[in-house]
Image (cartoon, rainbow, N blue to C red):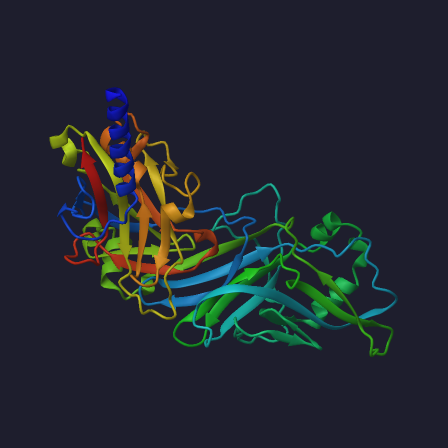
Length: 444
């Protein structure tokens, strides 16, 4: 009986401990958290952080492609250009006898945007002069040769309407951009149906399009995040047969299917930045500036390295015999009221391997746990991002054989298909705006 009583007491204590670990930890500073009996809390662990230019990233065959031009007072100018192949609708195309073009339209479905949609962007379309290769990986700085003349029917600026259905004939369609192309280009396609007996033969004949942005009106401009593989996207020929146009003109579409090669090029001009901290920290490479501001930008732009140089030493007085109940990395938005050059929906972490062999997921990543546990999404109420890094911190403190270094990269999640940016609080701010590591722990 005595043994059963002791076992029961032990299980009760363990249950109480695990229950306490699931309670939220409040930001109460250094010292004892009275909500969790036997649990200490600190948010004053030493962090070092600085921002720098992102490496090249693969932009081949992703879920979205970006097109547009943005001017940003902090991050300078960015232009996004998309290169894409197109397919046949079916095979063995026959346009009939004496096909004559009425119009040709490039349509691009709008999935999202970044910037100011009241501005207009000079989007230009060019025919490719070099084939896209299905075996090649294309990156954010890759380019492909294009022909010299634009295909635009008119060299005009285009606005987008992300919340407005587009009415065509008698139907209403999801928001998309419609760019009329030159009739001569449409007639060129109609006259070459003998190259359209298969997708491969068509792609050898017509290599694809370069869709780029050359300027914008207004102060900001915009970048459109497009879904080229949507049924709304593609090149559509409107034509008739014979010498006179019929009321019942025919049409034929060339879609950009998932098998088509497509990629986005991002061109940044950071020299137009007017932010002194950005210029000093990111462009000039003065890492000490990270004490005030940190910078994050999608589109192979800017990322931040965060280090915890004294984390293991901080617990030496316990001989590193500490259970980390909860660890959260907190990143604060310094410009939460920004309406046009908006913050990313989410950030993510990349763990740097201790042996210098590259990067990997942190053990708390949603790939191993869940999005709700891991976090990294923008909190609209508190204007911050929170990452749960409990397992990562536990390994740094207590596992000398861990593969992880005490350094992390923080990047915009989905950077290859986003254009958002963020200015966040650095390590040296003396209020809750600073980047910090919040720890709830129990010595044993």
